[in-house]
Image (tube, rainbow, N blue to C red; front, top):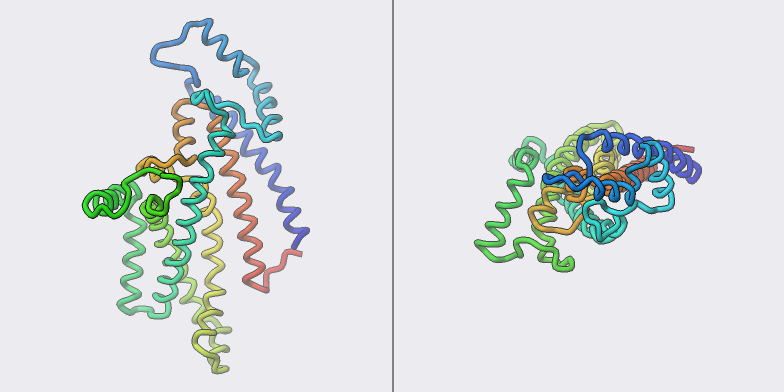
Length: 306
């Protein structure tokens, strides 16, 4: 297993390099620049800014300079938020996004997995229909609809929770953002768990366990173990997306995460901010895909990588 992990980490290097290269040239090919304003700057001012941020150099030279800086862990200064470096922005925003994403993912796994398993065990019953219907509803209603409704009901009408703000990560401020982030994931996890559980409950090894007279709880645990594999496959990219922030949720609830940095950077042509976000998301995706493969081997003894 250790040799497999090392091989995967080494193979991730060229993948990450390719992602950085494509993103670097794509953002530079987009029309406009970081200093293009409605009222154009004077030619001398623009020349000085381009020189300070090394935008006056040939594009290939800019690429090598950026790549050498990223290897050292330096994402450069933000072109728009000029009092901060990209690293400083991430140091402030990434813990917020990771806290929200981690709580939302844990909540989705617990609630969605439980609902899916119960629906599978009570297939074609009222509970099954309710869970299936709630899953379809959770997938169709977007976050930007659910969030304002919760703010109006729980924040304004009932005054149970703060409408927005981070407040140092106070638990009451986390409730609504976590629920909004988790609802679509709960729907997906519940539907996938239900489908995988039904298939596993009809498999030969479960029939064998029943014929041996094992307790129902033991049989359910074995079925859940087999049903976890497709859910884990989905949770890899889902975890990367949640832990690196949600633009809609962070904007509506006024949270200082990194999700909105990507949109702000793209709209303002903040090259370093966009590139930094791309690198962070790519690293998360690669790491979580590796974690998924490791969990495969832990859950299913038939899977071996050595």
